[in-house]
Length: 98
Image (cartoon, rainbow, N blue to C red; front, side):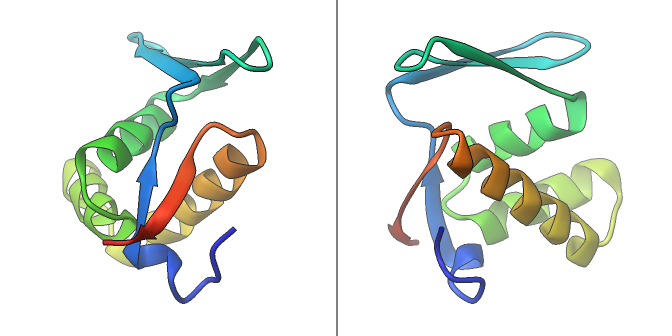
């Protein structure tokens, strides 16, 4: 994973071998290389969608913080934890800095 200092500026993307679909109660993520499904709660699903729509983690944090009316610092901590878990499972990639 990128070092802690550069993660907020990192470009994060969902690779081509990963597909996901948001449902009312969860987001289902499928890694086509491993055949494994992963379930995300609605908040984590919103975070993943924000990561896809924005240039970097810092921008995604701002979007999610506004959406949920939460402080950016708390959202960033949660989003870093989510990114770490998604990276470990091969569900996102870091592509340099935005």
